Image (tube, rainbow, N blue to C red; front, top):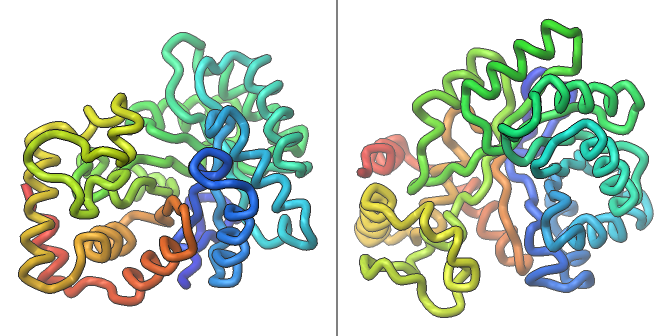
Length: 303
């Protein structure tokens, strides 16, 4: 396991992180605990959650696990708050997350999305207050465009506030928008990149075809509002291209997709979502396998 500094922070995070969107939603507490224990045994130290995951249920499950023994000292704990992002709501929701997580401090508190309805200065001032109060160590963002990151850094610098140290974007073989501006900006400004959905919520596992229909029982069948992100020609071309690479090499689409994003330049850590310990294993196998440059170049050129 490789550990990398997260942007301009003093946090060192594992190159594979554990996302917890499934905790309390798709898997119960005991199954979640076993996955967390297994991940820690394999030296994963970054755990990411959000107050919206299972209406706070994910944070509650994680808090129960963190309260056991020395678990809290082992992890870099990250959570997120969704809009609206007015000052009082940011401060209150941070307290709510701390209570559910059963901890005194959040290592990385992230804005889940940009809020056009609230003055950005108000939101960033609230985040800085949380840092000054010692409730949050560092602040970051999720799903931000490069101009939003730039604006956040400029406002923080102008006011002497805590700057954003990271961004959490959707990034995989099918969804590569961040390559145009976000990744170059983050490299220039030393912003950490914690990518999520390396398998495209199942889109890159081989289950999907050109029929544009989500197979029954898959995540996009259960949550169809997320399907439109992938239901486009570019994503479909890349998915089918990855299928061809898998057929030519004998390496599964899952292993190719994971190895590709884990090794992409500019990515600090890749969050994996788990419903079983085998999902942790497949990420480690992909990291250990790596990708020959020829294969990486072939996948980079898809679509």
